[in-house]
Image (tube, rainbow, N blue to C red; front, top):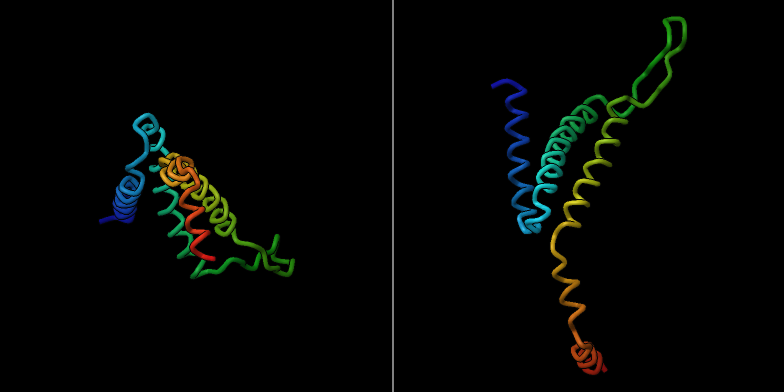
Length: 124
C-alpha cells in the first residue's frame, strides 16, 4: 500500500469518526456539515504528519542567503504551515460545534427558578 493510499484511508477513518460525533446536526445543515467534516478530517491528518516532521526536525533550522554568509536560525516553513492549519482546524471544529443542538441552553431557559431557590435554601 502506498503512502497516498494510507493517507486516504486515514482521512476516511477521520471522516467517519467526525460524522459520528456530529450526527445530531440538524438536517437543514447536514450539507454544510459534510464539507466542514471533510475539510477537518483532511486538515487533522495533515497536522499529524506535520507534528511528526516537527518532532524529528524541530521548529527552527539554520539558514543563510549565500555560502559567504554565516547561517542564522529561522523558523521552518513547516512550523508556519502547522500553525496556519491548526487555526483552520479549530475553526472547522468550532463551526461544527455551533451546529449541534443547544440542549443544555434550551433546558436552562425553560426553568422557572424554583429548583435554584430550593437548592439555595438547602445550602443554608
